[in-house]
Length: 179
Image (tube, rainbow, N blue to C red; front, top):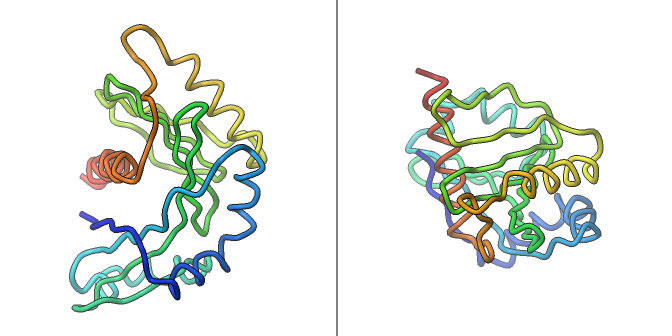
């Protein structure tokens, strides 16, 4: 399980902004605002044990750090939208959109193809990429409004702790798939 924290170090924030500035600007043009800079820190010795992940992250120009004892960390910007309340995660492969609902349903879309599929009893709804970043956000937004009902409501807003919770739900899905 990963550990998530907000990044307050100006040097790390600058590295993240330099890498993901274009993506952040494109999201801001779609109505998103900056939410936080995030570090996802994997377990002890993950920089060695998950060497393939490290290589892929490097290939996708992820912003990386290694913490003691050899814990691999990836650094990302998070942006938020209020219509609907959603979080956008910029990463090397593209952008992921997360929208939570009050009944525990989670809508996830990405601008890149993902092979993960929700388990049958999961409340995760995953949309395939719809083309460009703007088209993917439009499809995500449309689907979130379709999913909203009297029993499945959109929250009043989203923050960093909501992103962490949504990521943990997605991690549980990944654990299920690994069996």
